[in-house]
Length: 252
Image (cartoon, rainbow, N blue to C red):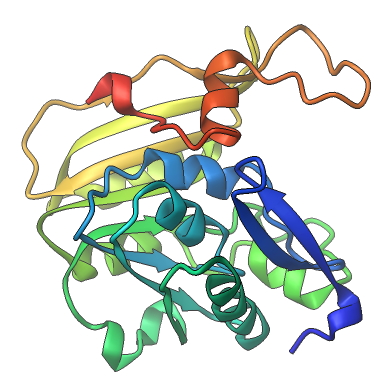
């Protein structure tokens, strides 16, 4: 487990959510916030976060949508412990189990209305992080298709998968949706206007039959370049990352 001196207390959603995170290791940034903001969960529904880490996506979602029954699966015990602590600190119920996609713990082998996932996106072959926990959280070991398959098994009929991944992983994710997931939509995430999208959010429904949709890119930063120490978010990104707005509301 992480020692207290190895942790920082970080603010999300303008301080409405406060998370303990390791000073060295995987630290949540915007990806889990965007993932949570894209999930169309409604009060009273159930959500499973595959690879929940310290709980950033699950707890951002729980802060935005009260009354959810949220569960998380996490491979690394130290991060699972942090997720439980963060849930308690923020007063958001979160059921966390340790395990991997290939052997999902028995208590999680049930149907959920939603599954969310932020899989690792750095491919093997490069220089891994010297911090083992960070390398495990960020470097691809399990194929994206396995993440989609695990999510599909846990979704009830009509349930939604919401996943964020690198753009280079999009073909694998889309190929893995068939035959059980349909009504797919892809939202490209661009750092700035005119820049290529390096991340995408993919959403699909179990048993869905609506046509595929490629949505207009969501631009995160205003201006052509970074402006000093200020986070120059676009108004749309500011509403999502700071105010907890629904990312895909305009497309529903």
